[in-house]
Length: 171
Image 1: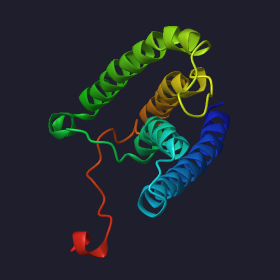
Image 2: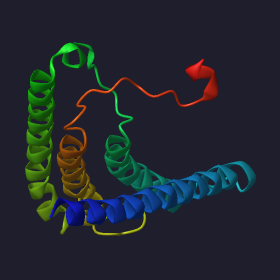
Image 3: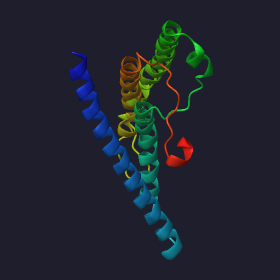
């Protein structure tokens, strides 16, 4: 059962990672267009600024889940890493529950924004704002999924020492 869930999550991770890369690329192009418009044409392209803003917000919320999946998020684990295995597991579950509760509140609290966003449009592109506000529950749900998966994957070694990313750090 867990193997199926893990495979689904791996496919989802690949999709979300590709979406994050695409969002960053679109954001980069939009910012370059905006700068070029202001510099060369002496004209502000408001749609480009809006696209860059929307991409950045989606990028942050989806990218936080990708970061969580890779174990690259900021964490202070000095105390839990010193605990015996049972205590470290309890700390791992407690941290995941508190984080999950926060993310659930974030997702639930964003539902009124989604309803409001049905009637609002963005200033430049006239796109319904509900698509913009959807990043909150989608990002929170993805992070909750990654939290659950990280608890299961880290069960045997809840707080491993950090791995060096480069050869220089390993020396």
